Image 1 (cartoon, rainbow, N blue to C red):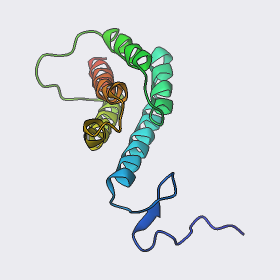
Image 2 (cartoon, rainbow, N blue to C red):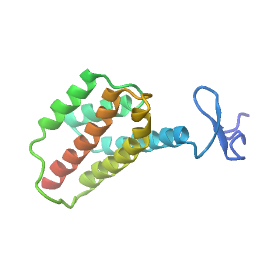
Image 3 (tube, rainbow, N blue to C red):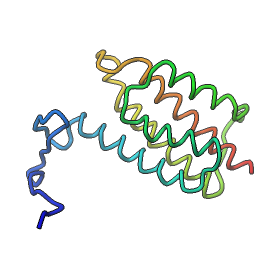
Amino acid sequence: MRKAYTKRGDSGFTRDRSGRRLPKDHPSILRVGQADSLQSAVGLALLTARGKTRAMLREVRDGLWKDASPRDLARLETFIDSLGEPPQGFIRFTGLRALRYDECRVRCRQLESACAPLLRSGRMKPAAYAWLNRLSSLLFMLAVRASRR
C-alpha cells in the first residue's frame, strides 16, 4: 500500500518543483505555501459566489499557478471597475461572504509581499506582480460589495 507520507521532510528540508533540496523556510518554499493558502481561501469563497463573480474567482484560482499576462491584468481591472467605487475611509466587513473575501485579500497581500523580492530581482514579470496587486483590490471590492448587501 502506498503511504500518504514520505518521511523525506522530517529533517526540515523539501524539494521544489525543479528537484532542488531546500529548507522548508526557504523563501521559494514559503511562497508556494502562501499561494496554496490563497488558493484554499479562494476555493472556500467559491462556495458562496454566484454568476460573474464565481467565474472570475475560478479564473483567479487557476491563475495563481501561471504567469499573468497584460491581458489577464486588464480582465481583472475591468471586473474590479464593474464593482463600483471603493469606500472612503475604513470599512468593517460583516457577513460570512464578506469575511471570506477579506480573508482571501489578506492571504493575497502576504503572497504579494513574499513575491516582491522576485520582482525586484527580475525573476518575476511585472505583469504577474501587478496581477497579484490588482487581485487584492478585487478581493477587497468583493468584500465591500458583500458587506453592503
